[in-house]
Image 1 (cartoon, rainbow, N blue to C red):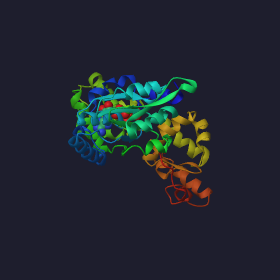
Image 2 (image 1 turned 90 degrees about the vertical axis):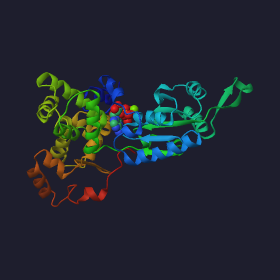
Image 3 (image 1 turned 45 degrees about the vertical axis):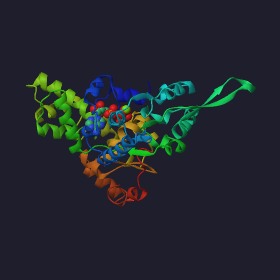
Image 4 (image 1 turned 135 degrees about the vertical axis):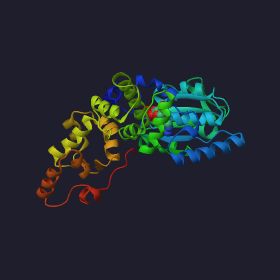
Length: 367
Ligand SMILES: Nc1ncnc2c1ncn2[C@@H]1O[C@H](COP(=O)(O)OP(=O)(O)OP(=O)(O)O)[C@@H](O)[C@H]1O
Ligand SMILES: [Mg+2]
């Protein structure tokens, strides 16, 4: 288990699946109509699925890109359900040898769905096999060894490959271009999260007041997986410390116990912002230096903490390093320090003030 996995598996705000998330399956929407948010993706997929089904063909290959916990696996099974077809699920690290992949490809049924999670981790030899399978619905198989070895092309059923990744930038372009349908899944807004929370609450039979739904949506980091996990924790608090109803009071007191705030920030999030401000004058600071200063592995900094801080407008990634924004000073009540740092530097250099940080532009989050 590397540092990121460790962090992700222990933090209540982790975006990756944990053992306690086994209930996720109960909460997973089965059809497009129950899948909240992502309006464009839903509309387009709905059209493509209907068209493929009416033609009696397999749906074109689908590429799902987005941070953890936003619904990639859920969407894959929804596609299979809507197509009325079978689904085989695996993840790239589980596919070791060409025969592992060939075994699955030769056994898929006509028009069914084959889902490969973490597709950016697929080995090159397997990736090449997949190119031919996706394009020609055939696989190359080598028979024999040495000079007498020969390659046979074996036809396989027409299938839909659904590839999911959290790191689109790490997927080779030959693979990427073989997907006909590309879906980039975005963080959810509070209203969409509110709908997800209400639906989940009714499925697990816990009464929750509207105002509590709003608060819970606010601290869910734009991520349905976190919303569902917090909902289960708040249910525990409500049952033990109150009368079982999740009220705004229950939410407010539980988040204190869990060490998070109403923006969905944890102590370490605030520590990262404070470090950039107090040690590096607001930035820019390189990821490596920052990771040492806050005692966090660079991967967990980049993959877990930063995306949300950036999304909320507290932090910017610039080619020269990380910079905080005025919003971060406000969050930490350090406006006076911001003024002092601006005076020291002789101008409004801080990002969020139209200074150098803005001109540098920001780097794409998931590339
Ligand atoms: N749009 C949505 N509407 C309702 N619930 C959702 C939605 N998206 C995700 N969820 C809920 O969030 C949980 C996590 O989603 P899912 O497992 O599909 O995420 P993922 O993108 O595959 O994450 P990972 O990258 O870790 O594999 C699901 O169990 C589901 O209950
Ligand atoms: Mg998944």
